[in-house]
Image (cartoon, rainbow, N blue to C red; front, side):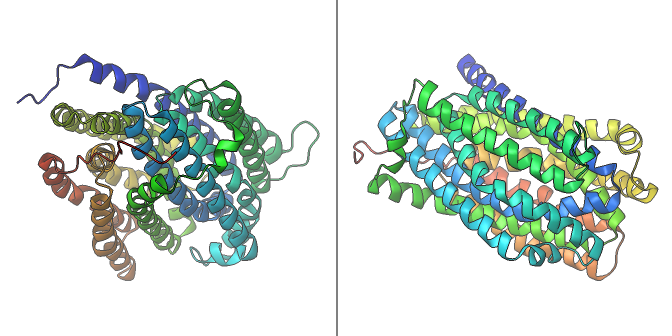
Length: 456
């Protein structure tokens, strides 16, 4: 029994898929980080307002990510046996359903914008800033949802570079527009956080247009056309729903976790909220590598299981466990090495109190991210992508509602130090490792989801 596979194709495929995904995530992080720095120049209230105004989008992103993940799991299995007709139908369903979700979320935000922001904070100045941001950015939801599912369809057929190229154009458009609209350049008025939201809207429209143009006019693997989006496939739809429902529900559970996290942190001071936003940027940077590799591993897993190569998949999974443990340890070391220059030199306009909180939060993150890198990425890249979507949903539900949230609420109730509250909310990332180790090495998560004959 080999712990490290000697199959070069595993490493070659993993790297070939991971690099474009990681570069896309890196560019996304860089632009979002630049946005965060621009907003930070407006002060703690502006940073907190955008942070709180973005929380409703967290639910949308989790919902969309659920549909996205379900599409990748099923479509990549069919691509593993080169059933392009089924992949096209699955892609069309995912795009339609995600678009419907975007429409609903935009409508709900526009009807009750103040209600959603006030759920997370009682600071009136932060609420006002958050509402202004939320109203404008909600108009981008439909375009975001549709484009993400188009790009996911492309990743399912081993074309991750498409997302890299399109997102690069859209994200740099967003960066330039942010600079112009936030600070009032090129003769335009300075719009502050409203300008940041409008920049996001314009860049999302551009990204969506480019994604559909590529899929309909340039793609040579699926050769989809607009009429394909209306294709009905009842049998595949049932498979999609059966496999995807636990994935979507799991993402909603994680949304509840993130929203409760924001609620709890929002009841601390504005400086603590600002610190949470700052450390969130660093964690997003770390996720570029870990979750880029995890996404690539997920595609490899779905294709291998879809092709029925179970023994090969066992060998791959053992190798992946070693790889992601190493990634977690390296990430922890990076946090400890860069924490002081990160806080001191990048955030010069936030309060001293916010910087002090951020330092303590980063100490906590250095510990918990080892667990995040190992269990979260492997449960997604192996167990969920291997077809056992219900286990990840059940596991997350138990740890979120019985461990993470209660721990955070108790820490808040007893008025403990902000870093302890932060640690309480993150403690499940370590505890999940023990359950994940047992599940992954049982190998009972490999489930072939493809059909021999699909409805046409």
